[in-house]
Amino acid sequence: MQLPNTSKGVLIALAALAVVIIWLYATTLLTVALGAVVVAAIAFTIYVVGVRFVRFVRDKPILGGGS
Image (cartoon, rainbow, N blue to C red; front, side, top):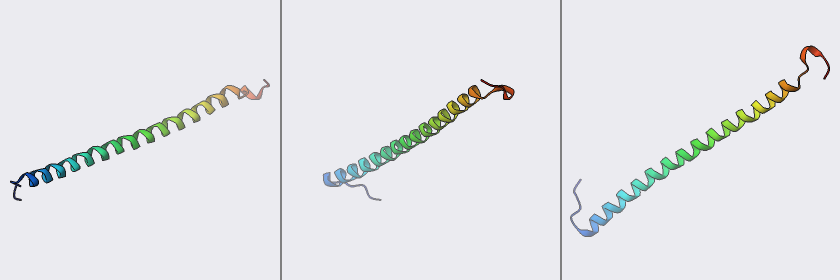
């Protein structure tokens, strides 16, 4: 690969490098954002199931007795 030696070639090379760097940042941020959404969804599901389980255990009559 020959290095560009004109100002236009240098600008094109810098622009291509900038596009690659921005693309890498964008995909990394997208991955982080999607991961955060997945973790939040899992945590919310665990919370909802936990709350329902606690309510179920708390309201369950002991040994079939009343109240």
